[in-house]
Length: 264
Ligand SMILES: N[C@@H](CCC(=O)N[C@@H](CSS)C(=O)NCC(=O)O)C(=O)O
Ligand SMILES: [Fe+2]
Image (cartoon, rainbow, N blue to C red; front, top):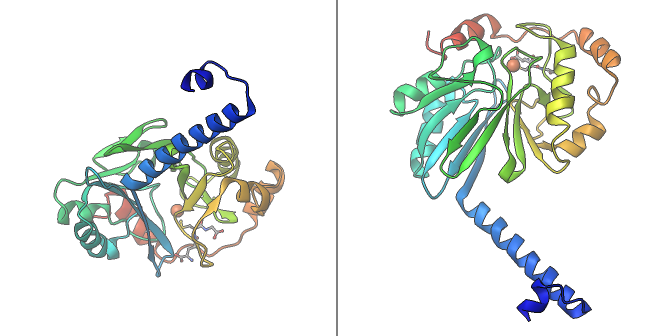
């Protein structure tokens, strides 16, 4: 029987069995993936920032993306309760609206290393470049340079789980503003179109903020419904030039603090 499947038995019944077999192989590998990958979305109501805890349930290694200073104790407690060991406290970029928790986490969870993009100009133990991989247990995040909101903005892509953490580059039905730090709307547009909209449609996207109670989106949704990034480059630049948003309340405190890992 196996021989007829492998060597091209052409009967319909055999083809049915072959597709069933392949289905089971795929299902088994998906289940296997899900059993070791841990994911938790956390929230700061003051700055509307999402922090993401990712872990490998087998090895216990975990990473935090975009932790907020005021929640460092909360995050460290959760990590301990879940039996994880925090190895990296990472930022998607040098934030302007809140102080990062990476410095404090380093002091309360010994062994943790801080991570940020090299082009951010911020201090950290590890500076990432485009294409670098961040490994925790058997899982990995690919750092993709997506400048435009700031120079050092990175999107962390987890291909094996079909998801990505977009920081402020791409927000749900929106995007990061480009009117301070090293903001450049043309650069942001190209980052999104070249590095995020080129991912498979089904990839789930997790932003650094949401101001309307939404938690996640997908490549397909944003390609279809993003009111800014579905426009032409010229229209996008026009939209971004006319956002007229007030500066973040914390900007004068947050940016200098985040240059030194939130320790000031
Ligand atoms: N009101 C908030 C700041 C809101 C804000 O400016 N958000 C940033 C991301 S944090 S740098 C942004 O890019 N927003 C884009 C948008 O369209 O809302 C505060 O005072 O902290
Ligand atoms: Fe930001």
